[in-house]
Image 1 (cartoon, rainbow, N blue to C red):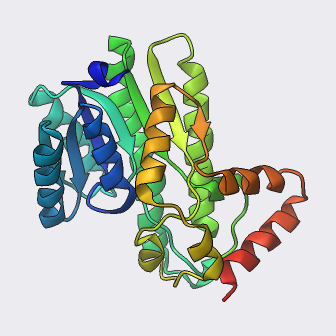
Image 2 (spheres, rainbow, N blue to C red):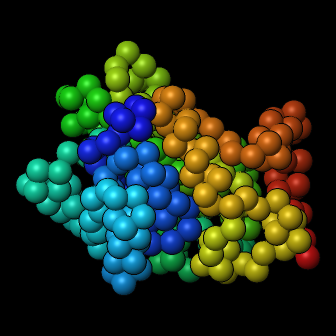
Length: 264
């Protein structure tokens, strides 16, 4: 879809109260799309809604929901359907990570993370993708991480969850190859957001040196989505890191990831 084709269509962006989600909403709005932003923090969503409307002259709405709750996800879909909102672009951005040795992380926190990062993503995709296939039109953008390509000690469950997102999205992209529906996975590296604060880790020197701006990630992601690419890794350094890991034994890859995550 060009900017003209996106004009007047609706995009739903989850996790849109901060970080990459806000910039994905901005990027879509800048290309003429109306945007529904979704998160749990209503005050932040109101600010994002107001900015999108004033800055890009598009329609913007917000919805508060806890995507860890299966009933809330179904209710979201039902409410949008009843309101006549056709979601042409679904952006599954909501998610978070947990830093630490896996046996030390409380199960309730880990379960919550897996519900949001995996179950919510898969459920929303299932709900909205069925309609897109019937219309033979639409896009799904899944936000993963370059941690999806390797084992990541101290982020064990998170990297495993993002591996699911990556493989699920790329498989769907192939299944849809003969349609006008696309599924794209974006796998960013370190991004200048509050992700690490939420995860319980202070960014180290390596992470500060290699981080990208969220608006850069959003631009690359939407460009790839509109081209119906299966996946994209923003940033040449992140791309090189992922592909170099494929040339070494997986145990060495895990050891390298551990050193980079725990260095001062």
